[in-house]
Amino acid sequence: MKTTEQIYVKSEKIFDPNADLLISYPFGFKQRHVNNKGYINWNGHLIMVGNPFNGFNVGIKKEIDSVSIWFGNNKLGYLDQNLF
Image (cartoon, rainbow, N blue to C red; front, side):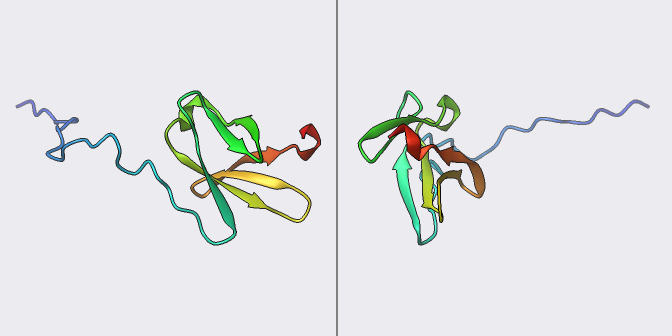
């Protein structure tokens, strides 16, 4: 007797395209919304974060001698302050 396993099951939850797009960040972070081209505005400058983050918020954290960009709990990298 051959048994088959069902791998995919359609979710009963209706998809909300706006759900979970706005990630909140703890005290000490500035938040910026990533536009539909993958950019944020930081101190009057457009900074490319990347298209995978379109529509989401990223966190900006000033550290001792740098500024880092975060997506949730993941540090994406640093802003080069010498560019400004």
